[in-house]
Length: 323
Image (cartoon, rainbow, N blue to C red; front, top):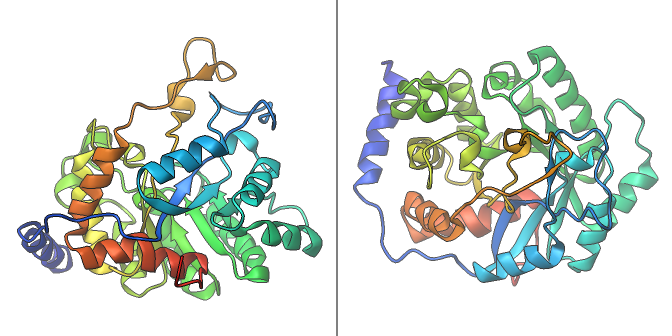
């Protein structure tokens, strides 16, 4: 084990002994990753690789209110491809309390009028979504293209990429001129996903994790503490991600944000024998327990405040200190 890795593991072990009690979701909290899916009003893409059941804007508002969260970031799910109509209409119905992340065909010219319409509706980010696929050259090219769109209205560039891609992106991200956020723990898959227990004990063994941490430490990359089931199979709380979460927070306490990933789609992993066009159930997730675990991992009310309020405000460009 090298010195860099060992040092941060030692700090992590020290932090584990000082976990606070009575931690709570603060006022004006943010959930930086949810989806809204309304197939009856907004048809899904015919070439989608799975079919989720409805998760309406009303359901989303009820979910957030039940957890004391005032603001959310609605991310267009892949089942809508690049049709952002459901996103724009939902954002308008929230009257400015929620913001959105769109998906665009970055290989086509996007006119300024379209971007202005999106911005006025509440879009504050554009997403590049490769999941766990893609080559470094493809990913880097798309990241650069998407960043050029994000710069027009000072949007966030949101990335769901294989964590190994950050080895190539480490020198690129600081040059993009936009705020950048990595989805879902940076896609750092731990031992229960990879069958390599080192990835749970020491996440620096994961190719690309060192580069993510370097970007976080130098304030070039935000990371969402979200969707733990994308990186762990340790149900029901996916607690083997603790070392990843706390390493991120130790290295970049001002560069992490919370996301629920509600309503917890199963993606193509949840397809049954009927294939991708048959509506599937959502994952059975104990949101309250995962939320409480996240508070515990934060370790102090000061870090909870950063994770749920201060950091997302900076990330999403929220300037109203009273909401």
